[in-house]
Image 1 (cartoon, rainbow, N blue to C red):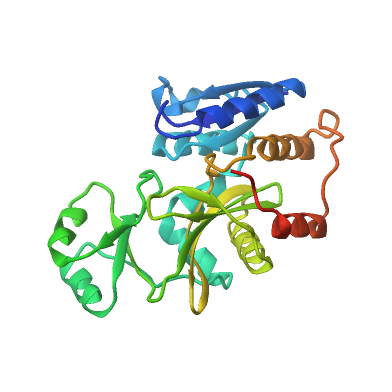
Image 2 (cartoon, helix red, strand yellow; image 1 turned 60 degrees about the vertical axis):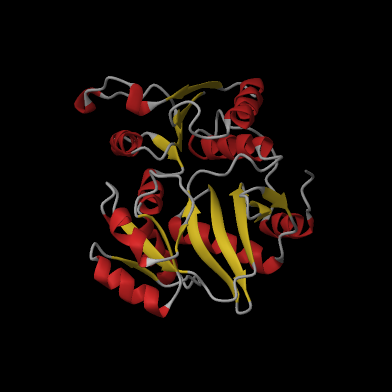
Length: 285
């Protein structure tokens, strides 16, 4: 039972301690676990051969996504599935899929013409972010037109999203194995555990269904008019406490779907149990 975690370059994501706990938990359950940084390998794509029974894609690097696609076409199982990661990696496609599924979103545009962006900025406050998820930077507020041309000259094309009037709070929901771990995001970017209401639970799960994700994170803002989703990531935020065991459970259960003779006998919560647990839980700090 070989599981390979595809990670980004060491130190680029604050998840080493939590991932180490995930590896240890899976090891105790009989899995052989190792990690790879795909972009650091010397690879001939046509000769790429799987060295694991299940790959867990935890990298946003374009090379990692490309090689995951090659493995997927060979029939290798990937968590999250490769098409889901590809849709989520392209933030414009992700937004379109979420919109088609009825998810409430801020209006979003992309253009390389600074005149269009200036025109938008005259009508509504904006935030900017690269179109592709390979840049982990947070949304950057577009405060004036002087910075627009610099952003549009960056190597990654940008998307511009309206900054909703009356924003009250920013939230990040980690969804793993059906459980929702909700945090309020402070002005400094810290995650503050809070209760997941039924509304947020349903919204977070609706995003996962729209993008066919099994474990992921959802960014949303609370306004006077309700909650709006500003982004989805196929990698959960491991700064959330208590995430290691649910991630290990999710990997084990996903593995068991395709290898039932080697899967675990761990009990699955039914949807109602998970919903109630998520709505009632206030994670400890």
